[in-house]
Image (cartoon, rainbow over all chains, first blue to last red; front, side):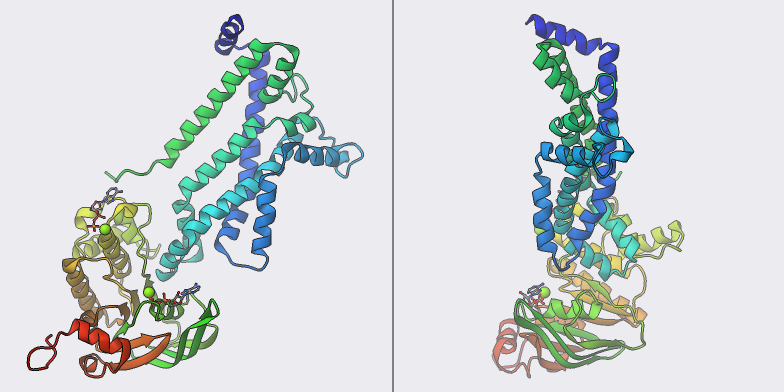
Length: 229
Length: 236
Ligand SMILES: Nc1ncnc2c1ncn2[C@@H]1O[C@H](COP(=O)(O)OP(=O)(O)O)[C@@H](O)[C@H]1O
Ligand SMILES: Nc1ncnc2c1ncn2[C@@H]1O[C@H](COP(=O)(O)OP(=O)(O)O)[C@@H](O)[C@H]1O
Ligand SMILES: [Mg+2]
Ligand SMILES: [Mg+2]
């Protein structure tokens, strides 16, 4: 109980280190989500709306990657970025950049796969309607995007949820370095291991609060169920 | 206006369309009638260029004629009915002109009270009027309509028919539409094509359809929709 009280106190008056951890977490999470969406959404739209050879195989591979164990992704990125690895010369290991790269390996397949299924559901009737109106390719794409807007926001939120809650991969490639690559999840692991439960609980509460706030803000972009005044 | 030559389409290992030769003149109004699955929608999609045929070709006269299709499943985009009606208008049009064209169409199709409603929250019949309205905001030379009154009540059906006839007359539009209703075919079209198993089973002037319905589905249809009067003449 004492620990919980102390945790609440920390939540309301975070110290400098806590702020720093939150800052790194937000930068890493938003960067990973944004880059993954930029890389994953258009391939998803392509896969969801076209028929091509090898599509079924591609979908199977994609679904496999959607369930990729984070530590495996972390290990692969670790090996790529390690000094003797092919990308070792970039000296990115144990940096926020390395964490973002590992996150993207995990999240891009999720974004692509979910976008493809959302688009595949809506594409046929939207396409027939817009082609029947002889709209230009651009206008068709814009209409498809605007019709899928709610679904795409959900896709982005799923990516965000994965990014903010991820611990195994970022721990491996980030190294949980204090004041540099320590994020909320890795510090919860660390502080729990050290027996500092108040800090771990405070971090957990803040993590949930951030996730809720982001979902809440995003959902206001998703409404659009009212008639137009 | 349109000529189809040896157009064939196979799907799921079955031939769903096989048209040796079909010609439709400029300004003609033609009804496509036939049982479920006879290939009406497929034929309209092939002409609209939405589905490529496996063989044969569709020739437009004059070349470059744009075929506009109202699909069997009407769809309202997630924006106001007014914005939905403006979708097909050219980007070069001023927004006031677009709005005026959309409102005029809304008035024709009794959509005025719905202009601010959300396009994907309409009833089936309302969506159908919206889908037709989107095609009628500007004059068209070739319209393909797939069961344009399939979800409409009897008054909406009559309204749609009247609006269509007026628009075709005014713009000299060539009209090809699918329907299950022989009476609607006779009201709107000068020519009726009966499609069975993807083939043209009958192609007659509308007035002669009942007499020449032949055997099979066409005959059962005329029995169903033209109850015989006591003296044996079809009651119209
Ligand atoms: N994409 C498709 N794949 C497989 N079969 C199809 C496809 N589209 C249509 N068909 C089949 O083709 C036949 C004709 O369909 P359709 O043109 O929709 O008929 P109608 O509009 O006259 O009811 C049906 O048996 C239908 O199941
Ligand atoms: N989800 C919805 N939100 C708002 N209005 C709706 C919704 N669904 C239907 N409506 C409106 O309710 C009315 C009745 O619709 P509906 O029951 O589908 O009519 P019908 O089936 O008799 O054509 C219509 O004016 C339609 O625009
Ligand atoms: Mg059909
Ligand atoms: Mg209804």
